[in-house]
Image (cartoon, rainbow, N blue to C red):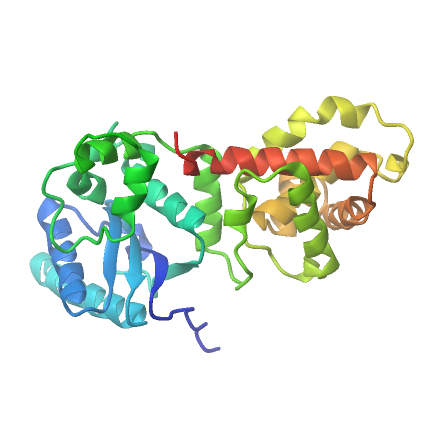
Length: 339
């Protein structure tokens, strides 16, 4: 079977990820990280990519890059191959170093670009290596938080954005230290990680859904259902933990239902959880079944029932579904809004 082509075009942004084969270390010493960054800098000088952010962990790396000429694949091939040859010579080994083709997710909205940037900066904090992204030697946050960020990092978009997000007359590197130190929610991390491995090219509506009111969220859910998406996994707009919390907040009302059409759902809380996990996180039926603790056939039935009940204009279920979905999206994207 042929490899799936990447959605690359001049001017697009990408979140790129790869790890070592068999999860072996890629960057055992700081010198190895510097060598890999030097290979990326060569690709920047060749005008194949622009690097906005990076985080090199022991066994893997994350990059936020812009593709000025639609050459992301070629740039990454050159950079990783050159690094692999250097690494193998230093360690007197041979064979592949990376597990295979790198993963990438094209970034089509500003909200998701900010999400990926925040995720990358916080990666060493999440791994409990450092408490502050500005202190991690192999992360771009340390560069940006200094008064000498490096000539090959691109701030064409990031510079004006941080100035708006952190107003004031302080130096830019001080603003970035505040910006990157705010942390990220569990829901945002889950959304970014789910998107990175997501297979599909659906339109990204994250910009529209950030801070959207429940009626707007409901309209989006109903439109997706009318387009008969059930055979595909939707592009995630929330994390699973945010969905679970939002459903818990509606539990009292759900359990009080006796009539008004909800008799078709013997367990309305489970139906709502299954349906929103599918719609908002793109979760597979197998994982939904494990989360809701039901057989996969029951999970499929719950998702379909959720779809039908959400379509009923003015119903109690549709209103609760909209409130829960809005709360879940808001929780996962709260770190994308200025403080």
